[in-house]
Length: 202
View 1: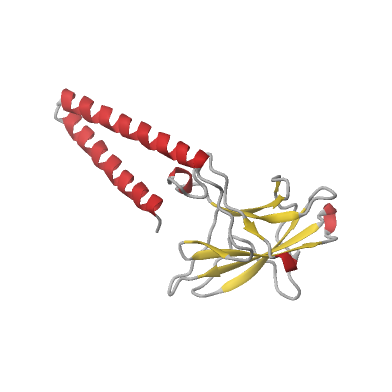
View 2: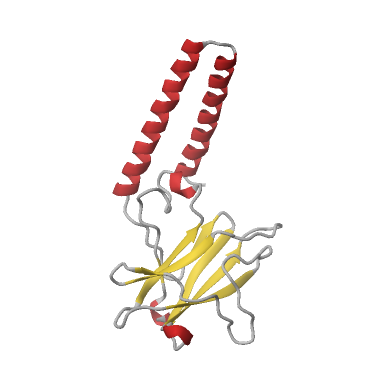
């Protein structure tokens, strides 16, 4: 858990507490107290938003070590390989992503996970089709469930313009609460983290 996560949790607790106190003050018709607490809540929200945006704009983009695992709690993903392809529909790059779990007991899935490929010029591309099968193995999706300690590969096809090559993977693990966590890869106005593919795999 990062400092940003702790600040977010503390902020949520503070806001919930203030909201309850405002509600109680209104029910008891203590209008001055309710107004004072409401102004405090508004000032806190404004300061938090200012810090969130400032950090998002000023903090450098996080670029991971090629092939390294990027984890969201116990759900992890690695950019394994990007290679030229002749897949149907003009998809000219095949990308392999390893999904793994660090959980000890529970099964889990990332229902909102999605992946983009970024080229050397910073342009991002969506998959140009559903996940593909790998050999005799069935096709697996980023959102598939996996058990404790389990891992599987997800193969996605992308269409890049001629002369462009993948620089890395941009992985999204849902927008909330990352978009409102100060310093997170997914925070508001901050470029998402880039997971480069190992050079030997290109």
